[in-house]
Length: 349
Image (cartoon, rainbow, N blue to C red; front, side, top):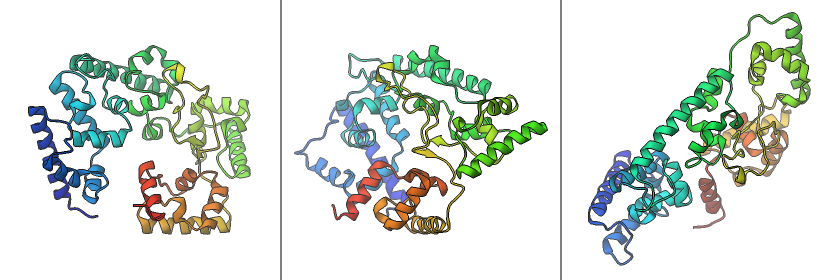
């Protein structure tokens, strides 16, 4: 359903006004018997055509801003009953549960009048920003994202908001864009020996049909080149390649060691993202067909929208569906969107 942007903004402005009125008179919860609430539910519920468009127009940050606004108004972390019911409906759908929503909004999960005050929230936010500065400085020093073990003195101040080291790095701005701008530089003074080592890596990539993993190159080769290149990523950059990467590095590195499942940041080819160098004629045709379907849909297709031979051929060549998309610089759909499309294809309502 297409709705004019002005109309969407009008709905959002109305919602903001309704929430303010409800907060002023203490009537924040959904009243099943209220004719007015029934009318609003028909408009704003996520399952309705209009409501879905309104819901999708809200960014994560906008929903978190509302939580923070309520915290400031009531001077403590809000409980679910202390936010307006339509916002609550959207927030729960977006973040899954209330503790996750509070964490995304930089809140303690200790909600209610007996929980943390807004002053504590502000102090934690200030401390968090100071820690981010430390992480950014460490990253500049290392020319790479610091590992959690290199920032142990910062961990306690982050646990209230983050679960994994990946989330911390993303929030601190140490993301893919940072890697591309801070970790890559051209080395102009390679010796003949070093040039031969680079050629050795390039030859290995041709043999593999993809960028080699660190463990697939001899230690002495890497160590020699790292003296000038500093990082594995920058070594590969010298020969026009990017490393195989997990879609979310450090996503299994938990700040709370009790949640740690023993996984560590390492080279993992399965579910890794990398450019495939040796696609056969048939696979290139499959990729071209995939691209055409994607352009027609104006989004990434799901498995059910692809011919079986295209899906299976590209999965075999690329290793994972996410990596198929990576060949075309595309990103997968959100899980909820994928499920909605799959349900529609199967005839669900």
